[in-house]
Image 1 (cartoon, rainbow, N blue to C red):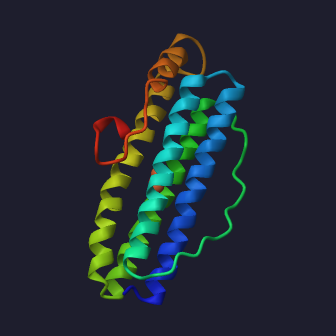
Image 2: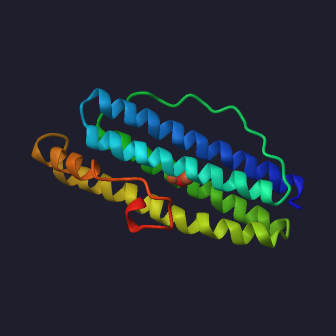
Image 3: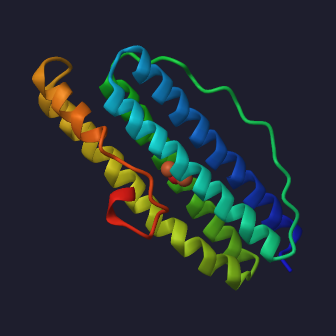
Length: 173
Ligand code: FEO
């Protein structure tokens, strides 16, 4: 059975993952408003990834006879200055999430909760991919600049992304 302190921390991470889903869905909506449907698609798939992350913690808490307590989720921003600004903001957010996961690992070590440590290894690896996939798009956007052909090429590429549960395919990152 999971202890109360670890249970509280993991419930906090469910909120973080759900906020991530909310943030990326908001970005998807914004990309729709500026007619970059490929970018909007990428963000919508990212939303599904975040829901997967939240549900993975939800299932783990239940498996460990913990209690899931859903918390209030903040309202995300609803506009950004440019596609690059949105992706830079997403990158910053992923760095924040990596920090949250690391804090959970340290807490699991402190609580001598080996099962949670092993569970969190998946998230540690996932965050490496999360940061890398967002950073790759940031770098592409910097390379092509804010306007012109390049943006539409990236838009077309991002439009091909589909959701596959993380860990099951290379296309899901
Ligand atoms: Fe659930 Fe994008 O980290």
